[in-house]
Image (tube, rainbow, N blue to C red; front, top):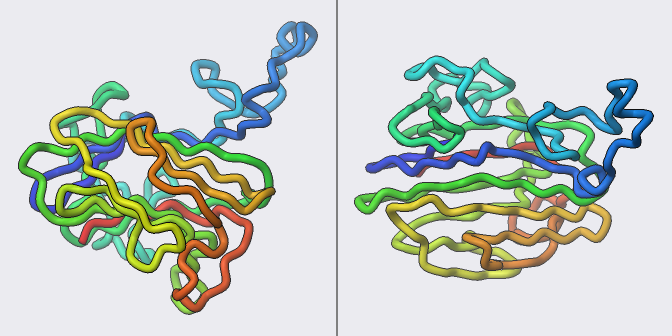
Length: 231
């Protein structure tokens, strides 16, 4: 589960998952099943093609996930980490609470081609205030911010979910409070296209490498990191 908070907590759960769409369509043969060999790595209970999985349930409630499971605060700063929460959850128990100074990063490697689908569930309480972001960088660095390049910056603020300021494909729609809503990002690195869906409805579709043309750092065909940020 994943939770995001500023004045009031916003919970994201799913579990947070990245799926290789090509592998997801490849079922194991009878020989592979007999040998116990699957065509790609996955947990037995997960859909085929699942390459990354996080539900926060293995962490101690109240602990900072900086330094756990590959998670860290921005610039490797524990003060930008986030704490495990069990106030909301569908995975079934825990979530991650992104609030205050939280700017939680998980880096990835090897995502340079193919089609990848990221899914999560989000719960925004009725009394939510502030801003929360669902972000992906195509390049990230702890030590050199001049090389960081943003591909996805979806912001939840003022009652709306929006493609962030300066996006090549600006878009906005009202967000839902008091219930779980699916977030889905489909990234086609072969065609340089990303499409973001909120509650099954497309918010925007456009370039992965050049979605924020004014940022000054050229994008590349790579999934570098996920970034869960409160402001």
